Length: 238
Image 1 (cartoon, rainbow, N blue to C red):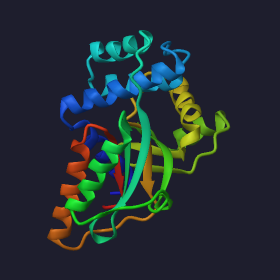
Image 2: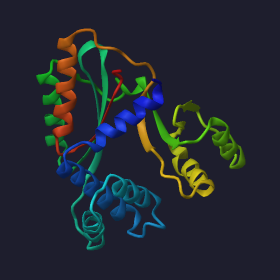
Image 3: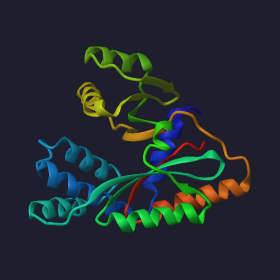
């Protein structure tokens, strides 16, 4: 079904998480974005993007407002972005992105998830080279030719374009996220992007061969996603 389908599936899985976890995730991210870059969303593109994403994921307005007000009030609460890399069953590789106020607690909890599923937490860089950090946009009901026209008009160079039934997906360097997104929405202001993410995509995917491997892998991902400090989990399993 192609990479675009896998991207959409990953996005759907993320938004199907428990509401309390989803609200906490956005609350932390919005608070940190407002605290570090200012609480004016028009001047703070990171904050603007997070607010738009939160609304798309049906996060209530009061959750968003509370996080921004907390930053406005000069709260001393602070979170650190940390990334862990590890290996699960069947040569699976995982990237676990966290936002935490206690790094020692977080690494212990993440390591426990790998240990309990017979996996292994790796050192920095051990799995990262198997992924690319990309901005991914899926434009529904849009052809590859229409996408190319926008990219040429705005002098944008992207990594790949993939057209599938129902839409076209753009893959670009993560650093070009705002430029590509701005170009799309200036030309198609009414469009609701099906995928609008910065994510780690595997260079090569692996398949798990046995039911036991699949069960352990699913358990590992579920355990990681249940941790309060975990924001996103990426992997190379098809």
